[in-house]
Length: 72
Image: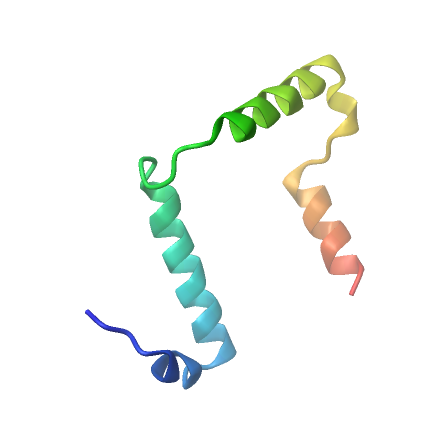
């Protein structure tokens, strides 16, 4: 299937956002599509260790979302 950019541009902003979300979700669902690099794996391990050492420095998704919605 070929999807042309001019066709995408004719979609509403909401439709384009939904399209991008659907594409991203399909990529995320395919765990083998893009394996982590060694540097990415090390960074995730570093962040996990930091969280385990002091979980108080984190925020829940609800808190992050509230912050984002509050600041334009």
